[in-house]
Image 1 (cartoon, rainbow, N blue to C red):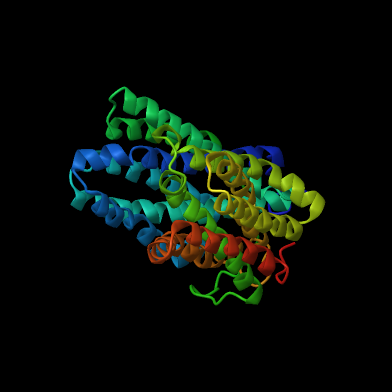
Image 2 (image 1 turned 90 degrees about the vertical axis):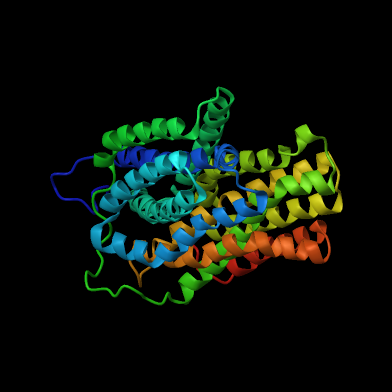
Amino acid sequence: MITRYFTPGESVTRATHRAAVGVLFFLQGICFASWASRIPAIQQRLGISEAGLGAVLFAIPLGQLLTLPLSGWAVARQGSRRVVLYAMMSYALVLVALGWAGSVWQLVPALVLFGAAGNFSNIAVNTQAVGVERLYDKPVMASFHGMWSLAGFAAASLGSFLNGKGIIPGWHFLLILVVVLAALAASIKSTVPHDPPTDPDAPLFVLPDKELLGLGAIAFCALICEGAMFDWSGVYFKKVLAVRPGQVGNGYAAFMCTMALGRFGADWLAARLGTRRVIQLSGVLTATGLAVAVALPTYWPALLGFLLVGFGTSSVVPLVYSAAGKSKTMSAGMALAAVSTVGFLGFLLGPPIIGLVAGASSLRVSFCLIAVMGLCVSAVASRVNVN
């Protein structure tokens, strides 16, 4: 029944809800990727060193981490539609501030706010996705995350084009703001109006139950793998494979390509094989891809390995979020925030751990560690209720 959480006068179809929430995921992805595509230009304009840039970029996860508990509470109290509207508007507005920042001291607090707005929009938009999934009674979460990945490709391409034309980030980000505000105005009324009923007197901080902690552990292992690929794939191709300069980014591109493709196919697989089997298969694919890249450190085998890793990591987090949204002990927003908190620690800690292990031994050894994390995804999924 598609009106399960709606009043009798509301007749918006579930397909319209799905399209509207897909737009929100695309907008969230295009905001983040627009910033990422112009980091080199902003670094050059502000004269930030490589080491300094690493410290500056830590402001985004700091803003995310500080607001993780608050975002779940806000969604539970105010509803995901209201939170996603204000959070997405804030996300785009702060993006403009990043483009016009005139110094590091202006950039850093703006990045903290950017991380905070991104976190609020992330929890709210995933809660919206959980609401749509309840209307379909089948997995649809991964396709939404596929829209985020698709937006990343679009934003990166636009950023490269505008950078080549000499358009400064400030004007670029103003364009993104206009697009976001227009798309929000067109889509927000078609989003899911009411989240599943929750207790209005629920406390701000609630300890997640064993099941949610297990889902968080899966997300933790998966996001260690994702974070490592985001930050270290280019380094691996450059230093371990010693490829030509024009091939350095090919491993990352291969990973992102199959990650996006995998997300659009993950719901279909989950509906036929079951969520648990898909997550287990994903962990095995991740480990296999990394093992190939480590055992055969030449261009084509490593490229094939990174393609497999992209498929392996593509579906885990969306399917875990889908399972968390069905929690019977917490509201969807609070459950998503709890799982995100545990998983985000993996995304935050993974890249520096890789660097430490690589410094003590080699980058190939550190990628072996990431392969073990892929196997841990499969192992934990076998013990946790993810269906």
